[in-house]
Length: 323
Ligand SMILES: Cc1cc2nc3c(=O)[nH]c(=O)nc-3n(C[C@H](O)[C@H](O)[C@H](O)COP(=O)(O)OP(=O)(O)OC[C@H]3O[C@@H](n4cnc5c(N)ncnc54)[C@H](O)[C@@H]3O)c2cc1C
Image (tube, rainbow, N blue to C red; front, side, top):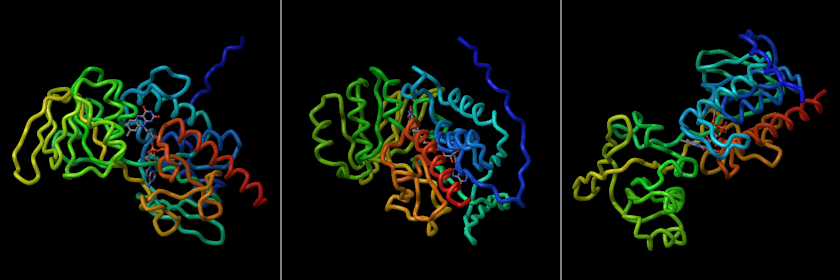
């Protein structure tokens, strides 16, 4: 057996605003970093522009469904993605957002929040999603310490505990279904008096003695010392307040695609997600998209990484066709 020696990280590579890169990758989450590694291995002349490295993994505490790792934390997986990306001489613009895209004679220009203008022949948009926040006191403090935005991923961490699920749509009710097998008690807090979720899903949770419903209730505050301990809720009509003792709060009120900057440029669906075909092509030739920002239904790390790889291979073929 041959020992594999990990390559050294390449230090910083200068950014050239005068050149035309072959491929610009926008977003440094699982989709964007995977796209970058694939492109670097194809020896494409690329640039990566991202607000951060990690994306939603920065919000994730424990991961048990990324193949190759029985268990890994979000921050450990980010470090691995980052190391693998930085073994190649790829110029990276970090801590900046792409604010707009313009197209002229087959060349795309990406303007960033720090007024850089990057030109490329092709691009992969991999800007992901961000969870819709409740915007209540205590929420940000306890992200990863009891507050979760992904029941599919984090429910197993709340075995035999009391938890609250916030929301009334399909994702909230699916979260409750996941938690029924795991948690001790589940409070379902829904701002509306009715559920938007499909009735077939609601039927599945209504008969359980583990669930208690607070319809017409909002959340006022999430409290605790180092970890979530309580949630303060209020009745929308009467303003009556109640405190529930919980170890977990699952906020399932939706995710927002980071697609504002390409609105009007690329075709989006009603949720603001980029419409792509099975080769990750958008409606604009030369622009590809991958991961959670697209209309691909499953939002998972392994899916985003796979789509990132596909997008690069499609962009590579497109570039070959240009030559
Ligand atoms: C709390 C939580 C826990 C999760 N747990 C799991 C789990 O256990 N297993 C699992 O498979 N999935 C999990 N997920 C889902 C998973 O994290 C996502 O499916 C995955 O991160 C999507 O990858 P992405 O690269 O498409 O997007 P993202 O991870 O959202 O990354 C998008 C990137 O684009 C950057 N960006 C955004 N806008 C711009 C812009 N305008 N300009 C430049 N850069 C921009 C962001 O900074 C980020 O780097 C979880 C999600 C959350 C929120």
